[in-house]
Length: 347
Image (tube, rainbow, N blue to C red; front, side, top):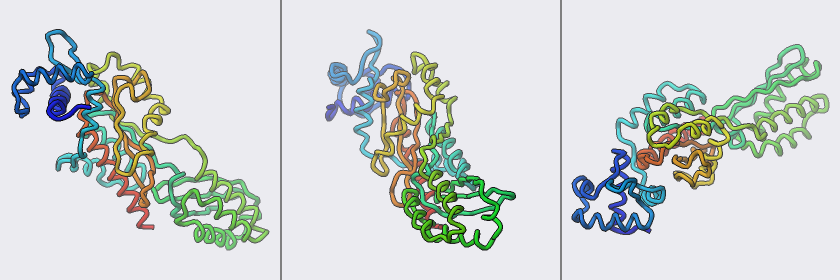
């Protein structure tokens, strides 16, 4: 554990190295930071930090650079995530101006996150397993098909086409009654509640419409509770290409980024974090050899009830401006949470 003045010296080393990418010498720290001690005292503190593994000396005559342990201590001592500046908030507003649907929101948010941080940004689409139903529609498609349209509180629209008996579609009034019953019973219901609700509806449905209701119920439950592959949106891959000097080899990292399963694994910890919590994984903590020189910052965006909808984050070199990146990740998550909360309130 780094305490007191040595923590201030470590913070200064991390900040200076992130800014310049040059090894940091004691005299430079004394000149650039108000540490209140002489270069000789700073050298003693740096020697102690090096002995404890928080910094190292890449060359005999060079200054020091942070190790992964040093970055971890720096991140763990960030007392609070700073708010974004006016220009940074304006950048989010500019990229998200005029969004009209879920796709626009997610794609605008991931571009904003990549631009704000200068890193690769990833946002997961909200899972249908964490949503509430807003509306259901039944649209007959002659001669023997029925389109089931599912609209959720997150703005997603899921469509399923059923092959049905012709007799089921010959009575528009009965189909409208079925639609009304489904909406009355299910609007506002959480996806986890749908199976029990439709089971009750099936028992209450007239025998001549029970077969159709059974088909609709099966498709509805499958759509909301299936383990479908999560969808990710990525922006800022070119930002990684501009940080080649921070990696011994960038190719393995780019290959890993192309595999969505790797990105999903990196984001997974975010849904286990408390609301408003930002998680930082540094170097070997990522559990992937290709990401041993990278850091990942993640969080979740939330429903109105406070449950996690999905995850987002950034990936970049360990030489990252952690306070700024953490603030940007949290700010974009807050924006997405507000968007979904407003959607729930407008039901």
